[in-house]
Length: 477
Image (tube, rainbow, N blue to C red; front, side, top):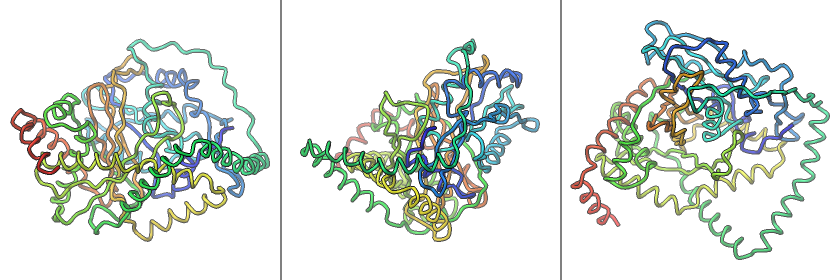
């Protein structure tokens, strides 16, 4: 039995039938499609590496404690590994529609919170695996680690190791309640120990408190409401999905020629996509303020595990009012530089820790009520979400078939009608664009704008442009 951390539990509490909190990906493979039994055997061989795949959620009576993971006594792998097919000729548009439909359905909480859909009939002698995992189970980086664990690093499948898994007995409701009460009793003790440790090094504690205060101040200021726009508002339960693509070599060319980081280039491209959408909808980009929530991983290199969440967030205002691609990249780079000094991720982590210190009997209903309230009273503090996750740098294989593309999906929350996920894989960069089915029918405009911006920045990455960029940076310093 393994108790969820506060952030994991919040992803369960906030899900409400409209806000679906699963993350996902679409992995496209070269053909021909292997036999279904061979793909099931692949997943079966890797289950010992991913214990959470055979566990389901149990809620504690009266919300006395956070939910726990327990072994599923009726685990059935073939329930989770499913087979479907696209209608001929199996175009990319068909795949996009299928992704939208699959992402519109919430995972069954009575079973382990994941599904893998084997998609047959993709044109070009290809097939796909659509992987869907609840956010309470993994963050974006851990989700990539899960796929890396399931797939092979060579075309030759790795032989299955011994698997002597037997489900542990299900805990009774009484035991869940007693364990939760025991945790409530020991929690204040642990907090006192943490306080004693901080007092033992007052200078370090003071520095952390100063940084945290600055971060909370910056985070609070960033939550001011933005002017109304068609990009935010209520959402329904159904989703659309599309994608844009870029080569990592092109991004490196932009970095070397124009400066900045990969993340700067990515955010500039996404800004261009949203600017194109604003213009296409007949709105004035100069009058639009578009704030995105950018998850920030708190994992160290040694913490790349396969389960639970280790994330915080920053709030970033996309400069959609800037028309010139070069000026847009400069604006993104300068704003990201400022945010790196703001300590906003530390503030987000502290707020999560504060929620975790409160009794679950208080936080669980509060989060559920808050989720319903946001659905009725529209928030405009966050207009979109942008998540950037580094994926496997080398090719992966399923039953000897090479994975050609790795395309991400990001969930939407209330007030957020469009979100973008970015995932790298084997020299490629994929932008998965999620939209609310009814209010974001034009998300392809965002995808096209992203690809157009990458192409424009590559064209600008010349010696003359570098000199111009340095002049502009000096002028704005």
